[in-house]
Image 1 (cartoon, one colour):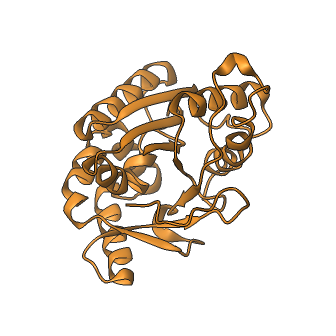
Image 2 (cartoon, one colour):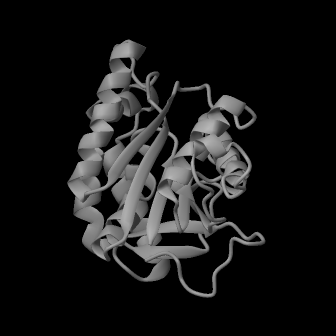
Length: 234
C-alpha cells in the first residue's frame, strides 16, 4: 500500500501517528509524510523565516530515521483555511503525487485552528483529487481513499474506533520526536508541557485501553466510498 500522513505542523506526525507509520514501513508499505504548515510561529525567540528552515529540516531528519518520504506544503502557521483555493490546489497536488491507499490526518475536533482547517480540507480535496477533469494540471486523478483521523493531543474529545499496537515502535517514535528540538522547547516555554514525556504517557494510556503496552488510537471516517472490507491500519 501507499500511505499518506497529511498532518499540520512538522512534529504532529511524530506525536500522533509515527508509531503506526513505522509499523507500515516495517511491513513493506510506502510511507509519505507531509506537514501542511511550516511551523514558522512555533518559538518564543527565533524569528519566522529562520524557524521555517529549522523546522523543515527537523522534519526531514526525523522522517529519515524511519525511511519516510517527507514533504511540506509550506503554508505559514495560523494561515490554514479549508476554503482557500490556493491551499486546496497544493493539497490536491500532494495527494495526486502520493496516490495513497489510505490517508491519516488530524481529527476535526482537534485543539487549534490549523489542525481543524486541515482536517476539513483533507476531507474535501481528497474527493476532488479523484476527479480527472478537476485541475488536471496537478497530476493524474487519485483514488477515493479511506481516511483515519489521528488522536488529539492528550486525547480530549477523541474516542478511538481502532488501535495500533506500537510497543515495538515506541523507542523510534520517541527518537523521531526528539529531532524536533525547537518545538520541544516551544511547547515547554509556551504551554509548560514536556512533549516527550506526555506522548509516552498518552501512548501508555491508549495501550491500557486495548491490552498492550503502548498504542496509538484512530477514528475512521465513516462515509460512502471510504470503507473497505478488510483492515487498513497495520
